[in-house]
Each structure stands twice: as C-alpha cells, then as structure tokens.
Length: 196
Image (cartoon, rainbow, N blue to C red; front, side, top):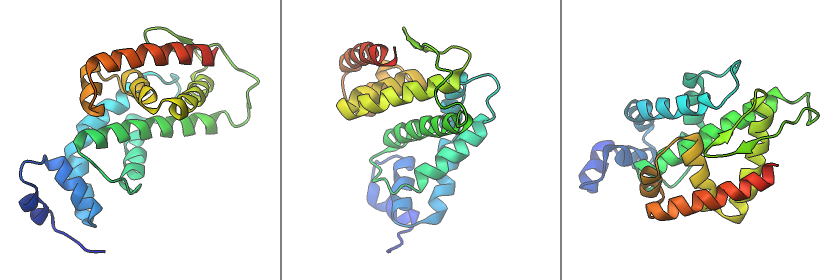
C-alpha cells in the first residue's frame, strides 16, 4: 500500500475541503488522518447522535458519545470510496442507525416478537414506550424499502433519524428539494403500510 502524506494530498487537491482531503488521505493509508478527521467532524457527529438518541427509549444504555465512537470505528474501517464531506456524514448517519438497531436487537434477544406494538407514521415516525421493538420493526421495513428504492430509504433515514432539512438532504444526495419531498411522501406511505 502506498502512503501519501496529507500535505501531498492538499497540494494535489486544489479547492477540495479539508474533510474530503482527510478522507482521501485515510484511503491512501495515512493513519493520522483518521484522528484529524474525527476532530473536524466530531461536532456534526455529536449533533447526529443526539438526534438519534431522542428517538430511543428513556432507559437506553448507549450515550451519544458511545454511539459516535462505535459508528466512527465502523465508518473509518469500512473501506468506502469517499466522495466528499457530505458523503461521509450520510454514511455516518446510516451507520449510527445500524448501531442503534443492533443494540435494540441485542436488548430484545429474549423477547423474540411476542411483545410487538403498533408503530405509526405521521410527520415523523412516532414510537410508543417499547421503542427497541419498534426500532427493529421500522428497520426491517426500511431494509425492504432499501431493496426497492434505495434513495427513498435514504431520504427517510436522513429526514427522520438524522433530522436533516429537505435542503440538506437534497445537497447530500445531489437531487432537488422537490424530489426529496416527493420521495419522503411516497416512502412514508409505503412504510406506514408495511409497519402496520
């Protein structure tokens, strides 16, 4: 594996943002780039983690910092061909949801479906008190939607779980705001039918 220094990447990159430069340096094998990257994106990741945790049960054992650490380790080590800063944050949001779903599955390992509750989809996905079961139900439905329409699944994930605005999602996915809104309505209807 060829190592390229961060300085060399900066010199080659021109106008590319610092996060993108660090992502490229990480991909090229620069171990120090991961630490520098975390320092740059930590506040964004912490905001995402707090948003995700708002949708979790009150007695959840994970704290936002633990969620960030687990997600960051998975994101940095997954070998993604990073496009830019937005791509990184989008993947981090997805990975945070996966961490929470994995945690919910572990929490409910003994229950195995005997205690299911209704989950309603309105402007957001409203959860009842037994959230871990519902997190799993919504994740299963989102996985089905991902297979049918990956972009709609991303819109749901970024709008509901990461609480990004339509404009932020449009920029992240490189689509129009109108497309985000249409995808949200279609996905919300589809998920509502599946989760019932």
